[in-house]
Image 1 (spheres, helix red, strand yellow):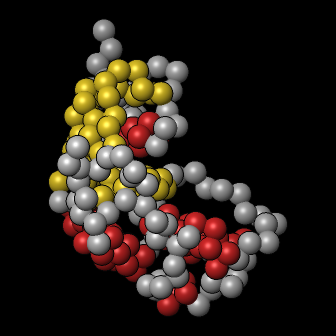
Image 2 (image 1 turned 90 degrees about the vertical axis):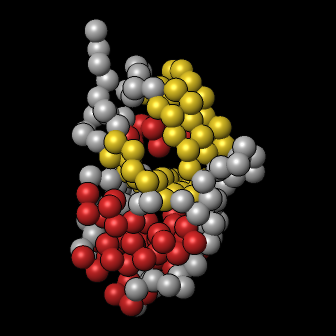
Image 3 (image 1 turned 180 degrees about the vertical axis):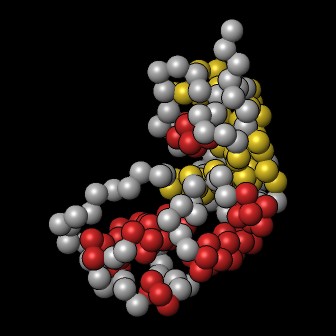
Length: 192
């Protein structure tokens, strides 16, 4: 297998199928976007690739030895958790190098003392900087301001240039058009 990821006629879901059959590939150094309306299974597809959702039919192939990182839309509870931003990065093996000043200056703050946008970007950075060949991102621009989206865009390009493959789910059309080299639009399931 030459790429990092390939799917063939993949249908995934939880209790029942949530997607139409999908052929997809992601190569090292490539950023692929997944778009489509709510409910077509974009997030479920990422979960299935990560081994969290059910494969009903088709195949998922990953290059042997591929390390995967998954960012979800789930917000982990942090209230009362005495974990700093620096400690979070250490847990994932992520480097703080390259963080924007508006966040780097707060690395020693507890996560529950950060704003929602700061916490979101820090957890996103922890995933992006983790040692992974294939990075799956689910709505990464949620809760980010213009500066956060601009920094994220630049960093995604850097990760791809360093050889990572990225699969990005987003409703942010401008972001997808700017950062993704290829975009796949998912359509709803037709139930008969």
